[in-house]
Image 1 (spheres, one colour):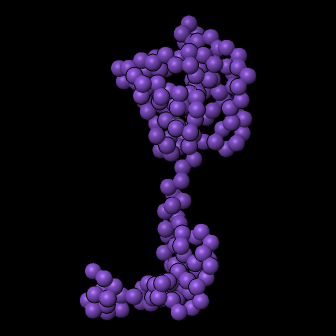
Image 2 (tube, rainbow, N blue to C red):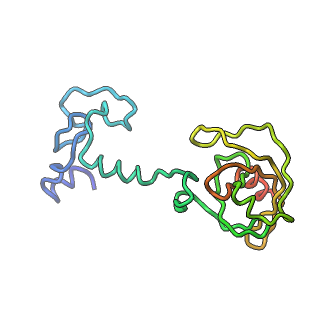
Image 3 (cartoon, rainbow, N blue to C red):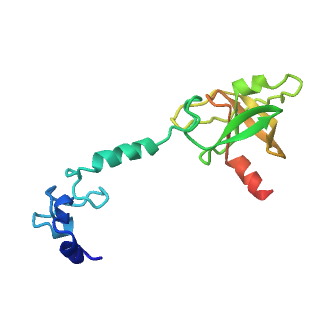
Amino acid sequence: MTRKDSDTHMPGWKDKIQCYNCGRFGHFRNECRAPKKPYNGNNGRGNGAVRPLHYNSRHRRMERRKINVGADASNMEAGAYIDVAVHNQPTKFLIDTGATVTLVSHALFYRIQKKERPDLEPITQVIISANGTELSLAGKGMFCIEIGQDKFIVEALVADISIDGILGLDFMKRIIAK
């Protein structure tokens, strides 16, 4: 149905349309008689000064979709977590395609029984978190990570993170190659 057809079927439907150029109701931007405001990258919506009435509700919905990955252990719904067992310790790891390496938290590392706990090698590597801060690293070691019936021996860094672990790209590439 075209706009012209709509006029005949539902009179006054354009009264609810807000122009992205001038902000007035009753017409579209391409029909606006006011001088066109320059495009500034605001999704084709004029100079950004005019915001349609639905902007705030849509903006709030978009804000709700933003997630703060791994920032708070109590916020487990913020991100994609998978049930794993690390040296027989059941936990959840965040799947993070932005992480280049797999990380295990200090807390999880010390929950592993001492006889099963991997020896850590010192590292000189610097890891920067998503918020731009440098992570405190204890070292790297070989960890047995179980996902369902599958077991993987993975090199991971032990870091001071708020969640038990992060599966990085190194782990995901290994899974795909399997």
